[in-house]
Amino acid sequence: MDRARDYLPLAEACLGPSIWHYLQTGSSDASVTDKQNAFTTIRLIPRPLRNVQGGHTRLTLYGQELAHPLLLAPVSYQRLFHADGECASAMAASAQGGQMLVSSLASQPFAAIARASSTENLDDPGFQLPWFQLYWQGERERTARLLQRAAATGFSVVVLTVDAPIKRASLQLPDDVAAVNLENHPPPAPLSQAQSMVFDGWMKQAPTWDDVAWLRQQTQLPLLLKGILHPDDAEHVLALGCDGIVVSSHGGRVLDGAPTSLDVLPDIVQRIDGRMPILFDSGIRSGRDAFIALALGATAVLVGRPYLWGLTVGGALGVAHVIRLLRDELEMTMALTGCAQLGDIGHHCLIAR
Image (tube, rainbow, N blue to C red):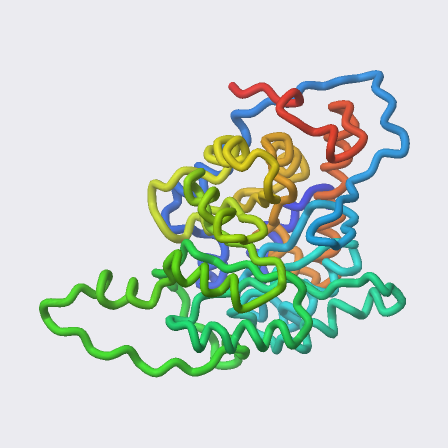
Protein backbone atom coordinates (compact mmCIF):
# COMPACT_ATOMS: atom_id res chain seq x y z
CA MET A 1 0.00 0.00 0.00
CA ASP A 2 1.40 3.33 -1.08
CA ARG A 3 -1.12 5.75 0.45
CA ALA A 4 -3.10 5.94 3.67
CA ARG A 5 -6.34 5.89 1.69
CA ASP A 6 -5.44 2.43 0.37
CA TYR A 7 -6.45 1.13 3.78
CA LEU A 8 -10.00 2.49 3.39
CA PRO A 9 -11.61 -0.34 1.36
CA LEU A 10 -9.83 -2.96 3.46
CA ALA A 11 -11.12 -1.37 6.66
CA GLU A 12 -14.65 -1.23 5.30
CA ALA A 13 -14.49 -4.94 4.51
CA CYS A 14 -13.44 -5.67 8.11
CA LEU A 15 -16.21 -3.70 9.86
CA GLY A 16 -19.94 -4.17 10.08
CA PRO A 17 -22.12 -1.59 8.29
CA SER A 18 -23.18 0.21 11.47
CA ILE A 19 -19.63 0.67 12.78
CA TRP A 20 -18.39 1.75 9.33
CA HIS A 21 -21.19 4.32 9.10
CA TYR A 22 -20.31 5.61 12.58
CA LEU A 23 -16.67 6.02 11.59
CA GLN A 24 -17.09 7.58 8.17
CA THR A 25 -20.07 9.92 8.40
CA GLY A 26 -20.40 13.41 9.89
CA SER A 27 -23.49 15.36 10.83
CA SER A 28 -24.24 15.39 7.09
CA ASP A 29 -22.62 13.95 3.99
CA ALA A 30 -22.01 17.52 2.79
CA SER A 31 -19.91 18.35 5.86
CA VAL A 32 -17.48 15.50 5.09
CA THR A 33 -17.33 16.37 1.38
CA ASP A 34 -16.72 20.06 2.12
CA LYS A 35 -13.67 19.23 4.24
CA GLN A 36 -12.10 17.16 1.50
CA ASN A 37 -12.92 19.69 -1.23
CA ALA A 38 -11.32 22.51 0.79
CA PHE A 39 -7.89 20.95 0.23
CA THR A 40 -8.38 20.30 -3.48
CA THR A 41 -8.93 23.99 -4.24
CA ILE A 42 -5.36 24.81 -3.21
CA ARG A 43 -2.37 24.30 -5.50
CA LEU A 44 1.28 23.92 -4.50
CA ILE A 45 4.18 25.74 -6.14
CA PRO A 46 7.13 23.50 -7.10
CA ARG A 47 10.57 24.95 -6.35
CA PRO A 48 13.21 22.74 -7.98
CA LEU A 49 16.96 23.05 -7.56
CA ARG A 50 16.74 23.90 -3.85
CA ASN A 51 19.24 22.14 -1.61
CA VAL A 52 17.13 20.28 0.94
CA GLN A 53 19.69 17.69 2.00
CA GLY A 54 19.52 17.07 5.74
CA GLY A 55 15.89 18.17 5.84
CA HIS A 56 13.59 16.92 8.57
CA THR A 57 10.12 17.28 10.10
CA ARG A 58 11.15 17.62 13.74
CA LEU A 59 9.49 20.10 16.08
CA THR A 60 9.23 20.94 19.78
CA LEU A 61 5.70 21.24 21.12
CA TYR A 62 4.94 21.93 24.80
CA GLY A 63 8.45 20.92 25.70
CA GLN A 64 8.22 17.62 23.83
CA GLU A 65 10.56 16.68 20.99
CA LEU A 66 8.52 15.14 18.18
CA ALA A 67 9.81 13.57 14.99
CA HIS A 68 6.93 14.97 12.94
CA PRO A 69 3.81 17.16 13.29
CA LEU A 70 1.24 14.36 12.65
CA LEU A 71 -0.62 13.77 15.93
CA LEU A 72 -3.29 11.09 16.35
CA ALA A 73 -6.63 12.77 17.01
CA PRO A 74 -8.77 11.65 19.96
CA VAL A 75 -11.29 9.05 18.81
CA SER A 76 -13.78 7.33 21.09
CA TYR A 77 -14.24 3.60 21.61
CA GLN A 78 -11.33 2.34 19.52
CA ARG A 79 -12.01 -1.28 20.46
CA LEU A 80 -14.87 -0.98 17.97
CA PHE A 81 -12.21 -1.14 15.28
CA HIS A 82 -9.65 -3.56 16.73
CA ALA A 83 -9.38 -5.65 19.87
CA ASP A 84 -6.19 -3.81 20.89
CA GLY A 85 -7.97 -0.46 20.64
CA GLU A 86 -6.31 2.65 22.04
CA CYS A 87 -3.31 0.66 23.26
CA ALA A 88 -2.40 -0.21 19.67
CA SER A 89 -2.73 3.40 18.56
CA ALA A 90 -0.63 4.67 21.45
CA MET A 91 2.08 2.11 20.77
CA ALA A 92 2.19 3.11 17.09
CA ALA A 93 2.32 6.84 17.80
CA SER A 94 5.20 6.31 20.20
CA ALA A 95 7.09 4.00 17.87
CA GLN A 96 6.84 6.60 15.10
CA GLY A 97 8.18 9.40 17.31
CA GLY A 98 4.86 11.22 17.47
CA GLN A 99 2.04 11.81 19.90
CA MET A 100 -1.54 10.67 20.54
CA LEU A 101 -4.53 12.36 22.17
CA VAL A 102 -6.41 9.87 24.35
CA SER A 103 -10.17 10.40 24.42
CA SER A 104 -12.20 10.69 27.62
CA LEU A 105 -14.34 8.03 25.94
CA ALA A 106 -11.46 5.59 25.52
CA SER A 107 -12.50 1.95 25.65
CA GLN A 108 -9.40 0.85 27.57
CA PRO A 109 -8.06 1.99 30.97
CA PHE A 110 -5.82 5.03 31.01
CA ALA A 111 -3.05 3.08 32.73
CA ALA A 112 -3.02 0.39 30.02
CA ILE A 113 -2.80 3.01 27.28
CA ALA A 114 0.05 4.75 29.08
CA ARG A 115 1.95 1.45 29.43
CA ALA A 116 1.48 0.69 25.74
CA SER A 117 2.80 4.10 24.71
CA SER A 118 5.94 3.71 26.81
CA THR A 119 7.07 0.33 25.51
CA GLU A 120 9.05 1.94 22.68
CA ASN A 121 10.68 4.54 24.91
CA LEU A 122 11.84 2.75 28.04
CA ASP A 123 15.39 4.02 27.59
CA ASP A 124 14.44 7.59 26.66
CA PRO A 125 14.57 9.87 29.74
CA GLY A 126 12.77 12.63 27.81
CA PHE A 127 9.78 10.48 26.90
CA GLN A 128 6.36 12.06 27.46
CA LEU A 129 3.14 10.11 27.89
CA PRO A 130 0.18 10.83 25.59
CA TRP A 131 -2.00 13.89 25.74
CA PHE A 132 -5.48 13.73 27.23
CA GLN A 133 -8.65 14.92 25.50
CA LEU A 134 -11.14 16.01 28.15
CA TYR A 135 -14.90 16.11 27.70
CA TRP A 136 -16.76 18.28 30.17
CA GLN A 137 -18.59 15.96 32.55
CA GLY A 138 -21.68 18.09 33.14
CA GLU A 139 -20.37 19.70 36.32
CA ARG A 140 -17.08 20.89 37.76
CA GLU A 141 -16.64 18.22 40.42
CA ARG A 142 -16.94 15.25 38.04
CA THR A 143 -14.76 17.00 35.48
CA ALA A 144 -12.07 17.64 38.09
CA ARG A 145 -12.06 13.99 39.16
CA LEU A 146 -11.63 12.81 35.57
CA LEU A 147 -8.84 15.32 35.01
CA GLN A 148 -7.12 14.17 38.20
CA ARG A 149 -7.27 10.53 37.10
CA ALA A 150 -5.71 11.41 33.75
CA ALA A 151 -3.01 13.54 35.37
CA ALA A 152 -2.22 10.78 37.87
CA THR A 153 -1.68 8.42 34.93
CA GLY A 154 0.97 10.82 33.66
CA PHE A 155 -0.76 12.26 30.61
CA SER A 156 1.24 15.30 29.67
CA VAL A 157 -1.14 17.82 28.02
CA VAL A 158 -4.89 18.47 28.48
CA VAL A 159 -7.11 19.26 25.49
CA LEU A 160 -10.65 20.30 26.42
CA THR A 161 -13.18 19.70 23.64
CA VAL A 162 -15.70 22.53 23.71
CA ASP A 163 -17.68 22.19 20.49
CA ALA A 164 -19.79 19.10 21.17
CA PRO A 165 -22.19 19.71 24.07
CA ILE A 166 -24.79 17.85 22.02
CA LYS A 167 -23.53 14.57 20.58
CA ARG A 168 -25.78 12.77 18.14
CA ALA A 169 -24.68 9.18 18.66
CA SER A 170 -25.68 6.89 15.80
CA LEU A 171 -24.38 3.61 17.18
CA GLN A 172 -25.48 1.17 19.84
CA LEU A 173 -22.25 0.03 21.50
CA PRO A 174 -21.55 -3.70 21.82
CA ASP A 175 -21.71 -5.07 25.36
CA ASP A 176 -17.92 -5.39 25.56
CA VAL A 177 -17.14 -1.79 24.52
CA ALA A 178 -17.64 1.13 26.90
CA ALA A 179 -16.07 4.34 28.18
CA VAL A 180 -14.28 2.49 30.95
CA ASN A 181 -12.61 5.54 32.54
CA LEU A 182 -15.80 7.50 33.25
CA GLU A 183 -18.01 7.55 36.32
CA ASN A 184 -21.63 6.52 35.98
CA HIS A 185 -23.64 9.71 35.70
CA PRO A 186 -26.96 9.96 37.53
CA PRO A 187 -29.90 10.49 35.17
CA PRO A 188 -30.77 14.16 34.61
CA ALA A 189 -33.74 15.61 36.44
CA PRO A 190 -36.93 15.48 34.36
CA LEU A 191 -37.88 18.68 32.59
CA SER A 192 -41.21 20.41 32.89
CA GLN A 193 -43.40 20.83 29.85
CA ALA A 194 -42.43 24.50 29.66
CA GLN A 195 -38.69 23.75 29.55
CA SER A 196 -36.57 23.19 26.46
CA MET A 197 -34.68 19.94 26.02
CA VAL A 198 -31.91 21.93 24.34
CA PHE A 199 -31.55 25.07 26.47
CA ASP A 200 -32.63 23.64 29.83
CA GLY A 201 -31.40 20.09 29.29
CA TRP A 202 -28.37 19.48 27.09
CA MET A 203 -26.91 22.99 27.26
CA LYS A 204 -27.28 23.15 31.03
CA GLN A 205 -24.51 20.54 31.15
CA ALA A 206 -22.24 22.28 28.62
CA PRO A 207 -19.17 24.26 29.73
CA THR A 208 -18.99 28.05 29.57
CA TRP A 209 -16.09 30.51 29.48
CA ASP A 210 -16.33 30.72 33.28
CA ASP A 211 -15.80 26.96 33.44
CA VAL A 212 -12.74 27.25 31.21
CA ALA A 213 -11.31 29.91 33.53
CA TRP A 214 -11.97 27.58 36.48
CA LEU A 215 -10.38 24.62 34.69
CA ARG A 216 -7.28 26.67 33.95
CA GLN A 217 -6.80 26.95 37.73
CA GLN A 218 -7.13 23.20 38.29
CA THR A 219 -4.02 22.02 36.46
CA GLN A 220 -0.46 23.07 35.81
CA LEU A 221 -0.37 21.00 32.64
CA PRO A 222 -0.58 22.77 29.28
CA LEU A 223 -4.27 23.36 28.50
CA LEU A 224 -5.64 23.61 24.96
CA LEU A 225 -9.21 24.12 23.73
CA LYS A 226 -10.38 21.99 20.82
CA GLY A 227 -13.26 23.08 18.59
CA ILE A 228 -12.42 26.76 18.01
CA LEU A 229 -13.54 28.21 14.65
CA HIS A 230 -13.75 31.96 15.34
CA PRO A 231 -10.86 34.42 15.81
CA ASP A 232 -12.61 36.13 18.75
CA ASP A 233 -12.87 32.79 20.56
CA ALA A 234 -9.21 32.09 19.89
CA GLU A 235 -8.33 35.47 21.41
CA HIS A 236 -10.45 34.67 24.47
CA VAL A 237 -8.64 31.35 24.94
CA LEU A 238 -5.36 33.22 25.02
CA ALA A 239 -6.69 35.83 27.43
CA LEU A 240 -7.69 33.12 29.90
CA GLY A 241 -4.11 31.89 30.09
CA CYS A 242 -4.59 28.72 28.07
CA ASP A 243 -1.73 27.33 26.04
CA GLY A 244 -3.18 26.69 22.59
CA ILE A 245 -6.16 25.79 20.47
CA VAL A 246 -7.20 23.10 18.04
CA VAL A 247 -9.05 24.54 15.05
CA SER A 248 -11.60 21.78 14.52
CA SER A 249 -15.08 21.11 13.18
CA HIS A 250 -15.28 17.85 15.18
CA GLY A 251 -15.10 15.68 12.08
CA GLY A 252 -18.29 17.22 10.73
CA ARG A 253 -20.33 15.57 13.48
CA VAL A 254 -21.82 18.57 15.32
CA LEU A 255 -23.23 21.50 13.32
CA ASP A 256 -24.48 21.27 9.75
CA GLY A 257 -23.33 24.23 7.68
CA ALA A 258 -20.34 25.15 9.85
CA PRO A 259 -17.26 26.35 7.94
CA THR A 260 -14.46 23.91 7.36
CA SER A 261 -11.46 24.16 9.63
CA LEU A 262 -9.31 25.04 6.62
CA ASP A 263 -11.57 27.97 5.70
CA VAL A 264 -11.15 29.68 9.07
CA LEU A 265 -7.54 28.74 9.83
CA PRO A 266 -5.88 31.76 8.13
CA ASP A 267 -8.02 34.32 10.01
CA ILE A 268 -7.33 32.65 13.34
CA VAL A 269 -3.60 32.44 12.61
CA GLN A 270 -3.57 36.13 11.71
CA ARG A 271 -5.38 37.10 14.91
CA ILE A 272 -3.14 35.04 17.22
CA ASP A 273 0.02 36.15 15.41
CA GLY A 274 2.32 33.54 16.91
CA ARG A 275 1.33 34.06 20.55
CA MET A 276 0.36 30.42 21.08
CA PRO A 277 0.45 27.18 19.07
CA ILE A 278 -2.48 26.52 16.73
CA LEU A 279 -3.19 22.90 15.90
CA PHE A 280 -5.38 21.88 12.97
CA ASP A 281 -7.96 19.08 12.87
CA SER A 282 -10.44 17.83 10.25
CA GLY A 283 -10.00 16.31 6.82
CA ILE A 284 -6.31 15.33 6.81
CA ARG A 285 -6.05 12.41 4.38
CA SER A 286 -2.49 12.78 3.06
CA GLY A 287 0.85 14.39 3.71
CA ARG A 288 -0.10 16.98 1.10
CA ASP A 289 -3.13 17.95 3.19
CA ALA A 290 -0.91 18.28 6.25
CA PHE A 291 1.51 20.47 4.28
CA ILE A 292 -1.34 22.81 3.26
CA ALA A 293 -2.52 23.22 6.87
CA LEU A 294 1.06 23.92 7.98
CA ALA A 295 1.50 26.43 5.15
CA LEU A 296 -1.64 28.24 6.31
CA GLY A 297 -0.14 28.63 9.78
CA ALA A 298 -0.87 25.48 11.78
CA THR A 299 1.85 24.35 14.18
CA ALA A 300 0.86 20.68 13.86
CA VAL A 301 -2.08 18.65 12.57
CA LEU A 302 -4.34 15.96 13.98
CA VAL A 303 -5.03 12.86 11.90
CA GLY A 304 -8.32 11.06 12.49
CA ARG A 305 -10.02 8.55 10.21
CA PRO A 306 -6.93 7.38 8.25
CA TYR A 307 -5.20 5.94 11.29
CA LEU A 308 -8.40 4.17 12.27
CA TRP A 309 -8.45 2.51 8.86
CA GLY A 310 -4.94 1.28 9.63
CA LEU A 311 -5.97 0.20 13.14
CA THR A 312 -8.89 -1.78 11.77
CA VAL A 313 -6.78 -3.65 9.24
CA GLY A 314 -3.51 -4.16 11.08
CA GLY A 315 -3.68 -3.05 14.70
CA ALA A 316 -0.58 -1.21 15.91
CA LEU A 317 1.36 -2.08 12.76
CA GLY A 318 -1.41 -0.66 10.60
CA VAL A 319 -1.48 2.61 12.55
CA ALA A 320 2.31 2.89 12.41
CA HIS A 321 2.26 2.29 8.66
CA VAL A 322 -0.35 5.00 8.10
CA ILE A 323 1.73 7.48 10.13
CA ARG A 324 4.84 6.57 8.13
CA LEU A 325 2.99 6.94 4.81
CA LEU A 326 1.68 10.37 5.78
CA ARG A 327 5.11 11.45 6.97
CA ASP A 328 6.75 10.27 3.75
CA GLU A 329 4.18 12.23 1.74
CA LEU A 330 4.78 15.31 3.88
CA GLU A 331 8.54 15.03 3.42
CA MET A 332 8.18 14.57 -0.35
CA THR A 333 5.87 17.57 -0.59
CA MET A 334 8.35 19.64 1.43
CA ALA A 335 11.25 18.58 -0.76
CA LEU A 336 9.44 19.35 -4.02
CA THR A 337 8.40 22.80 -2.76
CA GLY A 338 11.91 23.59 -1.58
CA CYS A 339 11.23 23.30 2.17
CA ALA A 340 13.90 21.54 4.22
CA GLN A 341 12.27 22.17 7.62
CA LEU A 342 8.82 22.91 8.93
CA GLY A 343 9.79 26.53 9.46
CA ASP A 344 10.33 26.91 5.70
CA ILE A 345 6.67 26.14 4.97
CA GLY A 346 4.39 29.14 4.49
CA HIS A 347 1.83 30.95 2.33
CA HIS A 348 4.47 31.40 -0.38
CA CYS A 349 4.16 27.65 -1.10
CA LEU A 350 0.48 27.85 -2.10
CA ILE A 351 -1.86 29.25 -4.73
CA ALA A 352 -5.58 29.29 -3.90
CA ARG A 353 -7.88 28.65 -6.87
